[in-house]
Length: 177
Image (cartoon, rainbow, N blue to C red):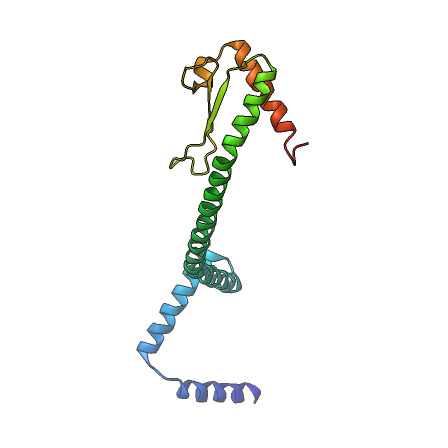
């Protein structure tokens, strides 16, 4: 009796099934795609779903990088502007201090047996050195000679005395320890 009831239920269920070949083909295609995805991204459907969620998150992150890049370019521009202003300020301060430093070194050189020494400190500006880091020291140890680059015209003894004079002046400057 129970088997007959089950058979009747099965017949009834079969009668209500749609015999739609297009729907059957779509279901078959969907199963094939799911099988391929499982083969590629994990043995279980849960692995495929997890991969999809991670990929969606990564895509959103990558798409938001466009905004980040624009923000970084803007920050870079602001920083470069502040850097250029600071470099101009440093260059100006160095150019202002150069004659005072030269005079103080000349005074020390007179005490170091170079009574006619004339020092000039040039602080040039260039595209590669906008803050004037490359300072040129020019010296003349004989009256009537124009100052020339220290590295070209100074003897070993003169060079040693200039370095000593610079060291004495700089160590006595305020803020130097």
